[in-house]
Figure 1 (cartoon, rainbow, N blue to C red):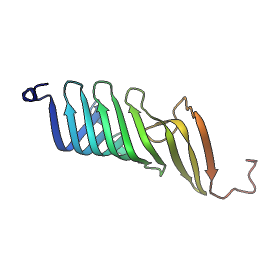
Figure 2 (figure 1 turned 120 degrees about the vertical axis):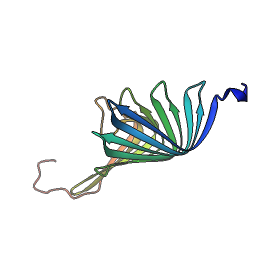
Figure 3 (figure 1 turned 90 degrees about the vertical axis):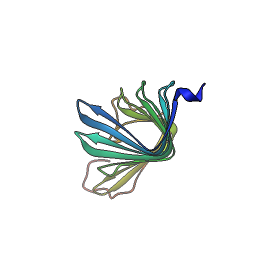
Figure 4 (figure 1 turned 180 degrees about the horizontal axis):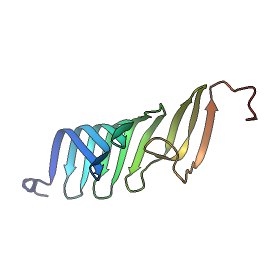
Amino acid sequence: MDESEGSEQMVESFTLVESDSGTRVWRLDSDLGRYMEEDSIVLLSGVEITFYENDVPETFLEGDSGLVEIEKGRMRIWGDVRAESSDGRVLTAPELLWNEAKGYFRSDCLVTLVVPDTAGETVMSGRGVKLDSRLGSTDDVDIRESFEAVYTGELDEESDVF
């Protein structure tokens, strides 16, 4: 590859925004982005992504590093990945994959999802999860192995739950 062709660019304070009919879907900010034009990918360092619902911030995600495949509409974020939704759901994982066309996160790594409610919280962990951008379930949730859930709230003794 001839360096003079300019097929690679290093950009500090890199920002990428995805929109649909003028409405923000997500915004990615990175400390450093390395754009490789020939492959149409961006390698990232220090990643922060905000997902929007009707142009209002809904979920904030951060990770150490990332890769954006621009033409394929996919992102891979890795290294201490943490996502938090506006309703307090928190997802942690070593790696998350985002598929723009399908609108979901996927991970085959061990993930932990904390879901708060009025009486406490439910902590779920396992491998092979699929979640939408609000950290809720998609139509076809598939937890492949090692799934565990722990509820730490109070149970209503009058309830017919059990």
